[in-house]
Length: 252
Image (cartoon, rainbow, N blue to C red; front, side, top):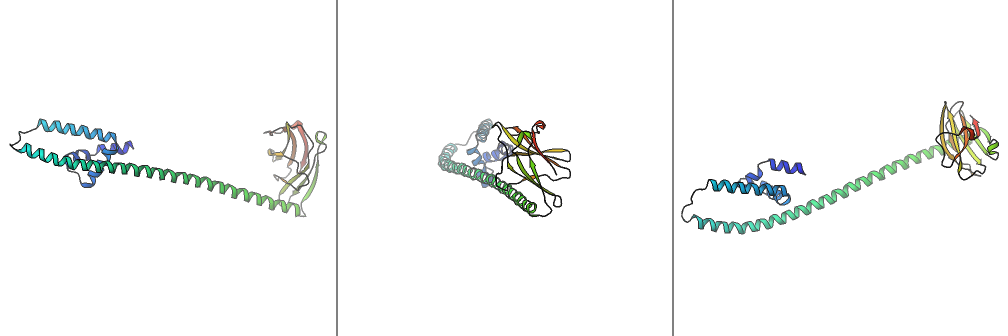
């Protein structure tokens, strides 16, 4: 906004307006700026004062009878100015209202665009999640129904004797899953966590819960000579496995 006002003040429109040499459109622009911006009004007043001083310095004694004519002209112009200022004020108010309404709708439009963007992003995320879930369901179906899938019964060690799980490995499709059907009771401050060592890198597969009778499968990253681990960690899980608390493992 300041740049806009500066550009206007740097132009010669105010001076031309004072001298009465502006076009109709230029006059409307000047009057709108004078009504709306204090900086322009102040500059306009200074120019008026300077012009008055200049006029006095270069004043010439007027012919007899000219004073009365000027007074009559001034009275007529004052009436015209009153009308002009009424129109100018009305125009300024209308302009301010227009700007306010425009700003309101612009803000509303921006908000709607932001909301649309958020909704679009959410839809994309949902679509991606649905694709991943459908892909996972398809892979589970392949693993469970493919004759080339190998089943491995997984049991817990001394720290988790009651642990029972079944791993499904399909080397042809390169898919692997595990179903943890039973977990032993542990303190509420602890949890079971699944890991996979693939190509020398330990991958955190998250906290696991007992699936019960449901055929709930957890995907394992497939690789040759990979190893899966189940550990007992503090509630909330850990970033790295506690090797001392490994309760089960499966090589696949």
